[in-house]
Structure formats: C-alpha cells, structure tokens
Image 1 (cartoon, rainbow, N blue to C red):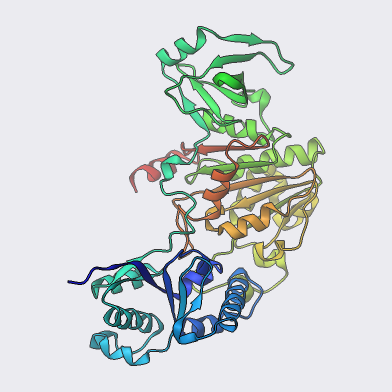
Image 2: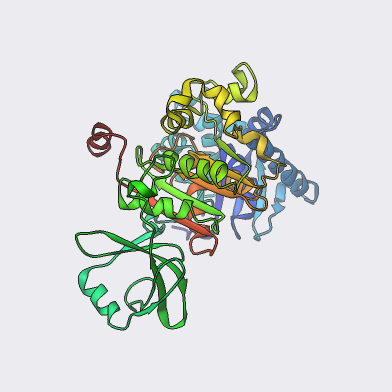
Length: 455
C-alpha cells in the first residue's frame, strides 16, 4: 500500500469563505480545492450591505487576484502558505453519489467533488471542510474525512476562559495573610499579598473570594513583581443604601458586576451568564445612573444582533429603525419597565426622554460613539468581526457593556468557541481598562432558577 503524502487536500464549502474571507491563507502548505458550485452560491449572496455580503465580496476579490496571477489554472494557483488552489469543474462526479443524493443540490455537488478528488488522488488525504454540521455528517456516512473550520476558534477549551473570580480555601488564605501588608487608600484599605506559586495568577480587575460564611470579594487592582497582588474590599451594592436606581445586588456575583459597571476607569465590561442572572437589568440601572444622575455619558445606546427567526429578518418589518428594532429589544424594554416603574406606561415615549437609543447592528459601521454607554445584548450571536467593528467604534469617554450567554447561540455557524463574546472576554482579560465577570445564579424567580437547573 502506497504511503500517504503529508500534504493534504482540503475541499472548501461555501460557508467557510463566507465565515472567513481570509480562509485561503490558513491552510499552510496544503492544497485547496474550490468546487465551482461554491462560486455559484457566493454569487447569490454577494449583493447587500450586511456582513455576509461584505465577506463574500472580500473573498471574491481575493479569488480574483489569485486566479489573475495564476500562470496555469490546471497546475493550481500558488497560495501564501505554499500550497496551491484548484478550481474543480468536475460535474461528472455526481455519478459517484448514491441515488438518494444524486439530485445535485449544492451540498451534494460538494460531496461529489470530494469523492472524485479522493478517487483521483488515493495517495493524498482529502478533507472536506465545512461549518455545516449536517453536511459533515452526510460526508462521513459516505466514508469521507471531514473537519469543521478550526482557524476561527478563539479557544480550544472553554475552561480556559476567565470567570472573573477566584475562590480561596481557608489554608491558602491563611498562608497568604502571613505576609500581608495593609496600605491606606482613599477608597478604603488595600491589602497586598503574595500569590502562591502553584496557583494561576488572577487577572487585573478580577475578584478574589475569601473563605468564610460571610462571602467577601476583594478586587485585584494591581500586580507587582514577585507575585505581589493588591486587593481591596469592594463597595457592597447588596445593601439598600447602595442601590442603583432601586436595584441592589442579590448575590455576590451581581455585586462584583455592579462594581465593574460603576468604575468609570473601565472602558469595557463583559458579563457572561445564563438566563435570569440580571445582566441586562444591572447594565441598564448603572447606565441610567451614570448618564442621568452623574452626567458621565450623554446617552445610552442599545444594540444586538438581529438573528432571523422563522424566516423573518429586520428588513421585512415596517416602520422606522426604532419600530423595526422594538420586537428584538423586548428584553430591554421589559427591564426598563422595572426600573422606571409608573413612568413606563409608554416605552416608546420615554426612550428619548431618558436619552436611550436603540440601534440596529447594521448601522454601526462608520459611526463613532463618544460619551456613550453602549450595551451590546446577546453578544454570543455576534461574529468576532462584528464585535471588532463595534469595539473599534468607541470614542472618548465612552463605555461598552458586552452581555451574552454562550448556552443560547442562535446563529448556525457560530459556537461557544468561535463567537464574538468569547473573543472579547479572552482578548481583553487582564487589560487595565477592562473587566469581566461570569454570573451563574439566576435571580429572575424561583421558577426560572429551577428551570435552568432541570430543563
């Protein structure tokens, strides 16, 4: 039996180029085959102003450059990593498919090309790369090698994502307290301790939870050489006298979240958590206080990804931008009703009165948000590129609040490993002007809390 050559042949599905227009640069020395049906499918979605259409046009431009500079298309077009790009016109490969798949759909034609290449190149490993789970399953059932597109992964293991807090046991805290220094500070005493060698260092602005019946969270605001960590006791928003717009923290995690939200020195705060943990309510309450009461910001802007449900996209809804967005923003208006109480008889009227704007993600490109409290809701449905677009729009004296739940991803080609929420949490962990906290306890109601556990 002939040895298998190390250089692989990757067959790309359409969604790979749509998801990452630069995908052709990610395959190192290996060869890439692009079925012509991929170009046909890209042609159907190239028009428009959304990110999908932009990605398609970007990928098409790169393909145009590669093919234009190619001396012999039959010999392949050189790729940056050292491999070659081939365009596959082999429609006759449909006769390789089982009768049930021979109707010639786009997916089946891609599978047929993969089978034909594998037959023609038995000494090479041929891999079909697709973001489409069902396509990968069908291909595996036919004995083909398949892979998800892995280059877009932010992390390989979600456990490495910071939670924003570290819990200490009694012995560890006792050992750390032996050489503790106490430094007076205008916001209360700072405690300087040596972090144990065997434990991962905390991130800047993460929280250290001390052992004991009365839970106490200390925030890390400085890390010196020799593993010396500066901690300070957080302001407690669990007491009525520290309530923000009538909202007080119901648990220690919410107290940590409000501590980050109320820190004007932080430009970005990310909050991950399951349904009912209070992410949106806390972000709105702290935003209203700092906008209307303290005057730190001129307005509150709320946006989110409008993921189509049941075929209905935002473009088919009548009315102005605000009217189009209202069905998507029900979670925001529900929480505003809690905060505004009797004033909330007409949410449409009070949005402008309280300097709250609702905007579609589509219109963020090209804007600059100055003196703005920007809430990005359902961020788990944003791509890393969309998240980058939003964060890079932030101007002076603004703050962006990123909210999301990786257990509720509604877009077909995103996962907890590849979305914009995961990326922003990982990339900003430890930056001196960013904070992050993961919320776990549901406080919506006892029924909602039980549902999260058992359903």
